[in-house]
Every structure is written in C-alpha cells, then in structure tokens.
Length: 146
View 1 (cartoon, helix red, strand yellow):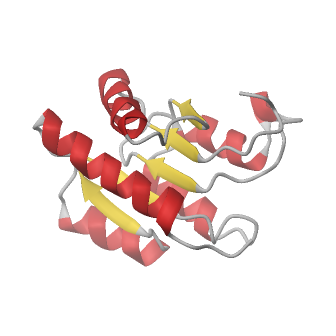
View 2 (cartoon, rainbow, N blue to C red):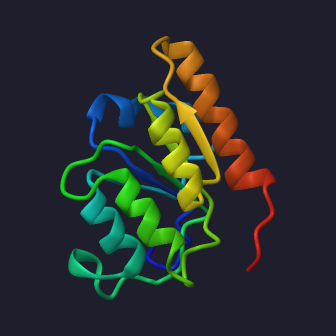
View 3 (cartoon, helix red, strand yellow):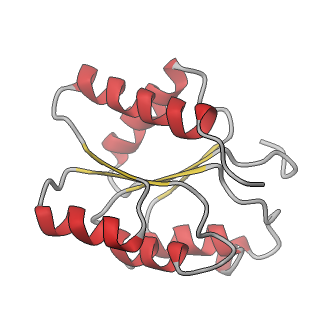
C-alpha cells in the first residue's frame, strides 16, 4: 500500500486467528485493500495519532476502526475513550468486535461513544457474515463528515 493511499480500515486485534478471519471476511467483499492490522491498543493509538513507530505517517484517519475490547498494553475501552475524546478522531466510526457479551462492557462502550458493538460469533460462517456486513456498512455505505 502506498503511503498516499488512505487507510480504509484499521483493525485492532491481538488474536492472530481472529485477525486472519476478520481480514478474510473483509476480503470476500473487497474491503481489505487498504486495511492496516495492529496488535495492541498502544500501537493503535500510535498509528491513529502518528506517534511512536508511526511518526511521519500520512496523517489521514481511517474510515473505520474495528476494535477488540481485550487488548495488551492499552485495552479497547481506553483506546475508545482516547479516540472519542479527541476532536481529531471523535467522528471516526469505531466498531467494537469482541467476544465479550458482558453488559458492563457494552454499556461502557456506548457511554464512551462507540458506533456499534458486535459480539464475535463462534461459528466461522456467522463470523464472516457479521464482519462482512459491518465492514460494508461502516466503510462503504455510511456517510461521515470530511
């Protein structure tokens, strides 16, 4: 991917298998061309805010962030909080994609401004369907301010 291309989707997922399944699901709908995968919350924040290893990166924001809840270094709730409390990133759609169906996690995510909360299905074909639909809606159909 050239540095000038806008990142369409930022995938924040520490589980390699879940990340590969998500990428495969998005590829089925041609939604993975401009995807960047980061493996923890600290790396996600560095990527979005062009700090750390991403200093000097083209500062365009992703069209969509798919965010896992349980992450090393900085958890998904803290990443979400930082994204939604910063004027530069508060309008970027964030979809929590997690195995947690805990009511407190759902409530906290919505309080912080998550755009959608999806619980990962165990079944692969269901997982592909959920991720494909979410990616299609948020990255292609949804209109956001520029």
